[in-house]
Amino acid sequence: MARDADAAPKPNATSEPNATPDPLPDAERDAAALAATLREARERRADAEAAVEEHGESTLSTVRDAVQRADRLLDRYVDSATGTGDFQAYVEFQGEFAAVVEGLDEDVPGHDAFERANEAVDGRRLSESDFQRAREALSPARDLAGRLAEREAAETAVHDAERDATRRLDALDDRIAELERLVELGEADLTAPTEELREPIAAYNDAVRDAFDDFRREAPARELLAFVADAAETPFVDYAAPPPELLAFLDSSPADGAALPDLLEYADYSASKLDHYVDDSGTFTARVRPHRTYLERLSAAPLTVDWPPLAAETLRFQREELVSVVAKFAPEETVARARELREAADHPDYERLRRAAEAEAELSDAEFERVASGEAAAELAEARERRELLTDALADADS
Image 1 (cartoon, rainbow, N blue to C red):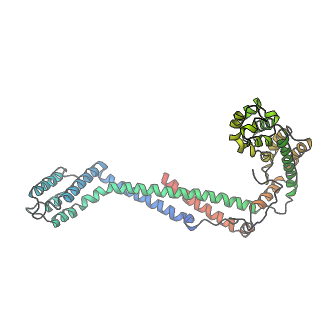
Image 2: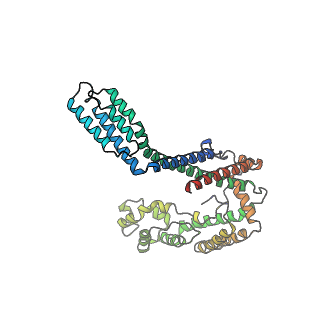
């Protein structure tokens, strides 16, 4: 629940942490750079796709496979087939390398590069420099094969650029929402008499807390839990429903009508001492102790009204439910306080008073100054421009 109406407000509290939101850091502001990166990545991808389409993916895959086979042979035999090395290795190398070249159709792009590489290693004696010349001769074919890798890299670059732009756009959306809220609250009328809403809400909250404390202390625990179970079905009363096994146990073994404080005290007793208070100490311990935290936390909080209050229509609905729920355990004067909430919700200046209450509760002196000076509005306009820039860039990427 939000802060209650009777909790003292802290308007313009400059000592509160994060009272003045920092502008987006530079890394978050550079939407133009992100948009440019995205455009460049898309251009790179388009160029890479066109380069692949020039010869076709299948043809370039053939060239890539041949380059990889040739490179493997050059790496494998550079030591054994050179100089006065192993003659058998020399023969194997020349035969396998020639087979790679002969396996390529003459119209395959890069075929000339393979022929020049083969010529470089087609000698009676080979040296490391011959192998190096063969590698250099293969460069044009290697560049052709690299078009496939470049297309993959370009696609990854586009994906990364779109991801970064989307993340920045999400951050800007959050920032814009914060700034819109700041500007809206900063323009609230701080002279509005918010006590005209605060007083009836605080009076009701005080009364319902006192009444619930009495109910919790005096009523049998089974009645209290039955009330909470019913109230949990009410949309504007935010109780967690009691555990079914606990409700069933209290209905069948009421522990002589013990109130909740007594029930919690029993949960600390030893088995021998507990036997004096309940019929079946083992079952009592098994059913009650696991839910001790739930029972200890039962309070009137779900029955109170938030401060600053919600919209008038919401408060009207909430008031109707509270009158009905509170009447099940509270005295008439508390129920009367609940009925008076309708008058607060019907106040002719309700929205102005509510907005002023929100501003008092949420904004610091520095934030009011940022709105009054126009700094917040300027930052909001700038953030919206960045959002539009990134939105357009992403839309272009989608198209």
